[in-house]
Structure formats: structure tokens, C-alpha cells
Length: 116
Image (tube, rainbow, N blue to C red):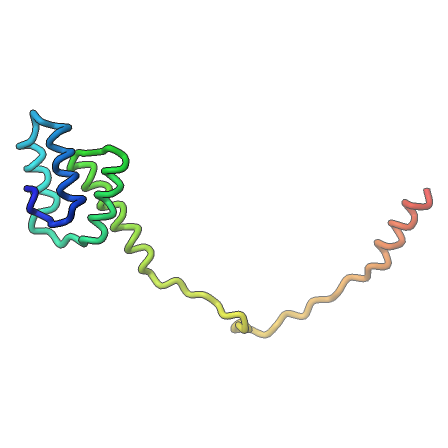
């Protein structure tokens, strides 16, 4: 179990798990194998999930699996290319003609308010 992954975080997590669930070590080992054995696990994301679980004292393998799935979804979302517009983007249409408003009407109203 401890040797499933070589990272120190994995070893610390397994130790914390066994300490938190001493009566359910077998069940936790079954959970760990179900979630992580013979799966295509991204080690970087797993290490991130392990750090999160260690910091937040959530030592069950079900919590680790949920945390791993969350971080994996977020990582895949970051990988999506988000198109950005350059500063010199002119658009794909002709510019709209917009009339400018005559401000003299507003100036008169302000002046009338001052005079009163």
C-alpha cells in the first residue's frame, strides 16, 4: 500500500490514514486500490490533492479520490485555450456610425440651476 506511489506525501497520507482508521485499515486499502491502483493517475495532480488532504486533515481515501477528481477537472479546465483579443483588434465588421450629442442643452440646464 505504502509503495503504490513513491512520493513522500503519499507515504505521509497512508500513515495518517492508518492512524485515523486503525479498525478499518483493510477497508481503506480496498478503497485505495479501487481509486488509484492500475489507473492513469497524474502524479502532479495526485501530489497536489495529497497536500490538500494532509493540510486539511481529511485522511480517508474517498476524500482523497474526490479531491483528486476536483483538481484534475480544474487542471483540464486550465488547459482549454481561451482566445484573447490583441490590442490592435479591429473586429470583423464595419464600424457603426454614432452621432454625438449636443451638450449645449445640458450646459443651459446647469446654468439655469446655478442662477436660481
